[in-house]
Each structure stands twice: as structure tokens, then as C-alpha cells.
Image (cartoon, rainbow, N blue to C red; front, side, top):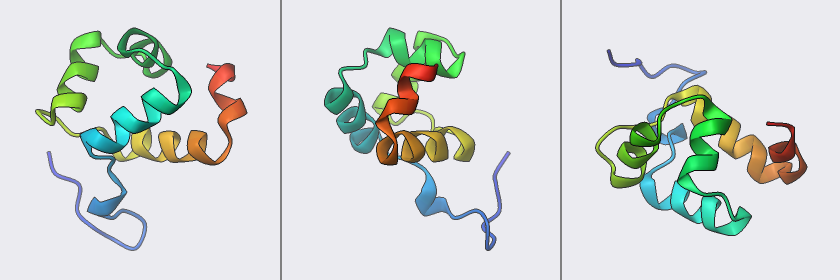
Length: 76
């Protein structure tokens, strides 16, 4: 299923593997911890990090929110 681009959704919103890895490294978050935050398997996180699958727009937006407000990470 492909999300069509619109005023509210842009393909550029999705984090690429390098951005995700940089976020995880900056905040000391392991693949296991990220899987727990998003309620997904560690395999899903592996796929995101290798580029085999894209993160959802919602998860990408949540990471962007965490980047602006790192204290929110502790809420999950």
C-alpha cells in the first residue's frame, strides 16, 4: 500500500536509515529499545535500518517530535 503525497503527507517526511541510525546513536537507543517504543518487532527495526522497509509516516513524525523534544522519549 502506498501513501499518496498530499499537502499533509510528503514522501520526504519518511526517515531514511541514516537519519534513524543517527537519531538512535545520539540518544543511545538500541534496536531493542526502539522496537519497544514503537511496539514492533526487532526484525521491523532491522528492516528500517537496512532500508528494506520504510517507516510509516506516523513513526517518522514521532521521531521528528522526539528530535525537537528529547524528554518525550522517556515517556515511552
